[in-house]
Structures are given as C-alpha cells and as structure tokens.
Image 1 (cartoon, rainbow, N blue to C red):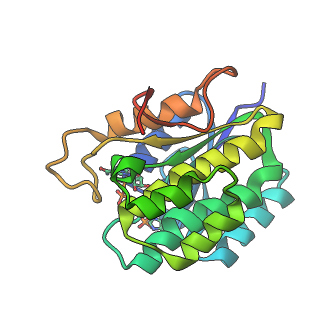
Image 2: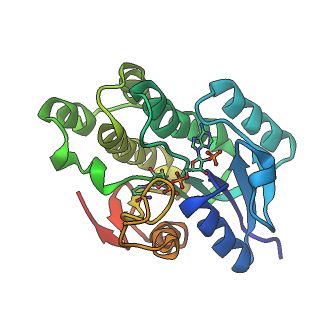
Length: 231
Ligand SMILES: NC(=O)c1ccc[n+]([C@@H]2O[C@H](COP(=O)([O-])OP(=O)(O)OC[C@H]3O[C@@H](n4cnc5c(N)ncnc54)[C@H](OP(=O)(O)O)[C@@H]3O)[C@@H](O)[C@H]2O)c1
C-alpha cells in the first residue's frame, strides 16, 4: 500500500521539524518544504521553497505536479514573528494562500489542510475593523490577498488572517471532502517561542497532528488548540 503523503512548510526546525519527524515515524512520506534543503529532517524528501517568494512557491507546485504527487496532508507551518510587517504578511498569510491554491489540484479527496495559527491571532484580540473584515460572510481569497498586501498590523493580525484563510479554504474544498482548520500549537519552546515558553515542541506538534489525523467527519473551518475550539 502506498504511504500517505504530507507536505510541511518550515520543516527545518521547531514545530514543523518535530511534526515531520513524528509523521515519518508513523509511516508517512513527508515532503519537507524548506529554504535550505540541507536542513530537511532525516527520512523526509527535501523540497526547496521560500514562502516569501511567489515564484518559488509556483516552482515548488510545478515540480510536484511534474512528479504526479498526491497530497493527503498539507501543513502550512512556516512563519515569522519578529520581522517587518511586510515580511510577516508575505510569509504568514500570502505564502499559505498561494501555496494552498497552487497545490489544490494535488490534494487527495478527503485530504487535511492545517493552517498554523496562534493564540495571538484570536479574533477577539484584533482591532474591531480588522476583525469585521476578516469575519465578513462573503470573504474571498482575493479579499485576503488584498489584506495581505496592505499588511494591517503585526504578527497577531497576520495569524487572525490565517484563521480567515482556513475558513475560506474550508468552504472552497468542502465538495472534495477536504478538511481545513487553523490550529495553534500553543506557546512553544522554539527559536520563535523562546526558552521560557511553557510547552515542548512535542506538545506543539501534537496540537497540529490532531488536524492531520482528523476523521472524515471531523470539523472544518474552525480554530483549535489541542483539539479544543478557540476563537
Ligand atoms: N513557538 C510558538 O510559541 C508559536 C506559537 C504560536 C504559533 N506558532 C506558529 O508555529 C509555526 C512554527 O513556529 P516555530 O515556533 O516552530 O518557529 P521557528 O522555530 O522560528 O521556525 C520557523 C520555521 O519557519 C520557516 N520559515 C521562516 N521564514 C520562511 C520562509 N520565508 N520560507 C520558508 N520557510 C520559512 C523557518 O525556516 P528557516 O530555518 O529556513 O528559517 C523555520 O523552519 C509558525 O507558523 C508560528 O507562527 C508558534
């Protein structure tokens, strides 16, 4: 039987690397989408991508299409925190939007898509105008792309947009049985989270793994941490 296949961005270190390690141990074929292919974890296939660069994302999608890859899971994990707003929105929002779009046709029926969110992206913590835009019923991918271009705010705002991105993709991919959720790993001891964070990379990766292993009747379009809905 063919192994299920997952593509994970930002698999070079931190939570993405731990998730890649776990999935390999569970028998998955893992495509590690990384900037530096030498940094891909053992047992994975390295695929070069710079999530801030639309051409690089398109090139990755072309390579996977040419290789007839079929993805059972896509984890948009790569992210930046302390960076200029332009880069934050490019990597955290535009990147996942473009990559998911470019790989849509490669997603297997019933695939799982995880958009890595954050507790700092809680809608209730965002400025009212931004939250209103992100929660608008008719919100489209084009609207989110425009928002990403404006880069209205920092890391938390960008992760709120990731939540909206998951909701829009969940509706778009529902006819194919694909489940899309925004999932927070919690505050985790990584380069990003710092040494004082309360959670281990294993705990952070487990929160994301829940979204990869959802049953077919699992939720879609929601925001979760450790399998529990958050706002
Ligand atoms: N740690 C936390 O407490 C926490 C809390 C909530 C949410 N999160 C989210 O969890 C995810 C993983 O965070 P982490 O803590 O594991 O962060 P990390 O240790 O800083 O790792 C970030 C990862 O993103 C990759 N990345 C950054 N910019 C990229 C780009 N332009 N193109 C491709 N890859 C890029 C990095 O690759 P390089 O090695 O090439 O730099 C690295 O693999 C992020 O989305 C983050 O926002 C983390």
